[in-house]
Image (cartoon, rainbow, N blue to C red; front, side, top):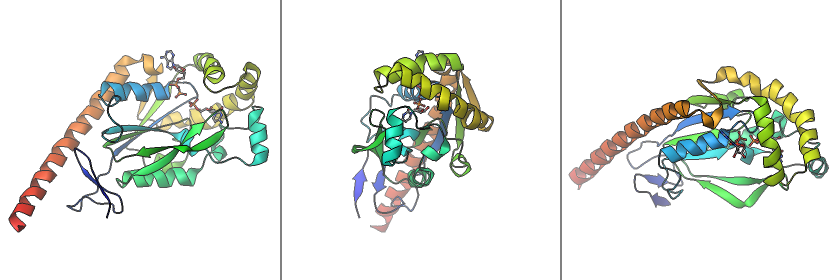
Length: 258
Ligand SMILES: Nc1ncnc2c1ncn2[C@@H]1O[C@H](COP(=O)(O)OP(=O)(O)O)[C@@H](O)[C@H]1O
Ligand SMILES: Nc1ccn([C@@H]2O[C@H](COP(=O)(O)O)[C@@H](O)[C@H]2O)c(=O)n1
């Protein structure tokens, strides 16, 4: 059986359990909110404040994943529509719900998961740049519709909703889509008015009621982020103590059996 030695744990690739039979299951946090509300920025700040951002990704105790990696592949006709800003990427049907569920299940079982990155310029998944998600103690899963699908929503241990005013979100989305996602102004505004805004109101905004914590003003809300970081820090400390105790028990029983 393949094994990977991490500083704090041993991960079994072909099985679910640690040598003592224990499954290393992470604390799963969902981070929802409208487009350009600051979901990724909030996750980045949480990672930075926990000293995780600068760590090698194989060693991280906290990892962050985007729902965009679970957009479904488009048909050739849909691709042509998408290039003109005429495909609805804000509708739940744009996502591969099953793959999202299976991947989160895998992560919750402490198994390694491979997910593609997303290329907004080609509107497609980029399997050449796969992200390998190593088992972690805390996993952040962010996206516009992470609370929409009941089966997925039920997997989260904690749910955050980043609540940023819609004018601010549009003002951020326009330059981002032009500069980072290769779009032109006309296409960005047409897509926003035709799909993004109505879908936010129909599918994303109603999921705010499922949140445990609402973060007004997104990443500007340092008080909310500090509180969340403190809470995650306590989870990590408890996990470290539990892992330390498990390692001691395993070591002493191995010594005894020997
Ligand atoms: N508090 C903020 N102040 C200024 N710009 C911000 C702030 N939060 C996010 N941004 C910018 O807005 C854009 C969208 O933010 P991002 O975190 O990617 O949002 P989301 O993940 O919700 O789409 C990015 O260009 C980001 O740099
Ligand atoms: N090919 C795509 C895929 C998605 N979008 C838009 O991205 C938004 C979700 O990402 P955020 O970082 O803004 O949360 C969503 O509103 C889609 O409209 C896209 O434009 N093209």
